[in-house]
Amino acid sequence: MAMMTETRNAVGHPGLFSRLVTGLAERYQRHRTYRSCVAELSALSDRELRDLGLHRSMIRSLAHEEAYGSM
Image (cartoon, rainbow, N blue to C red):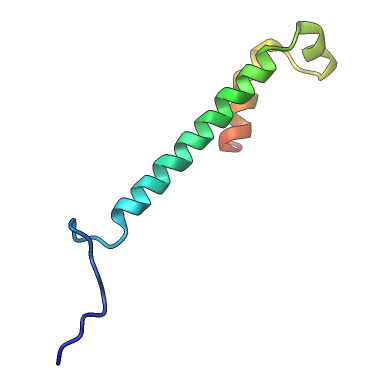
């Protein structure tokens, strides 16, 4: 009697859809982190940013580093 030991989905690749969904969810979460960081830093006044040692032109690069890591 033959026994099947591996199951495949309709596409024929095991777990392809779940890997795709997981990857998209991770990208979405990183983008949300980026947008949240930009919003929070943008809400600070120039004086508050200066107290932190930051300039307004640094906001996007800092948010990118926070969400996606160093380049």
